[in-house]
Length: 73
Image 1 (cartoon, rainbow, N blue to C red):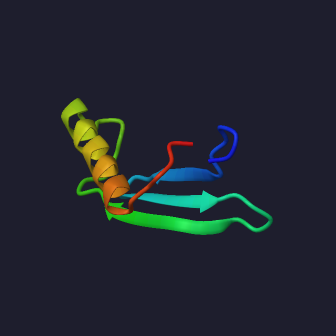
Image 2: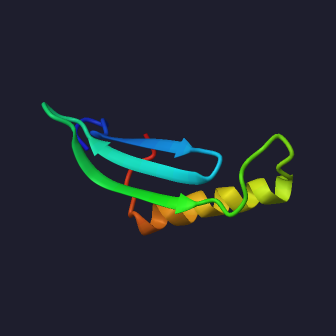
């Protein structure tokens, strides 16, 4: 981190059946730092319960940990 700026960015895609993430480092050409994907056991719908949503949040946190994400930007 130079002068308080983080050169990495995190992208998260929460789909109906999986969560995908990618961490890129900025530069002349963006470079891949890490990535990950996890399947969601049941599709997300308008009828998804709060308990199921909490489980999806847990899946995302675990995925970020396993992929060793080092930024929150």
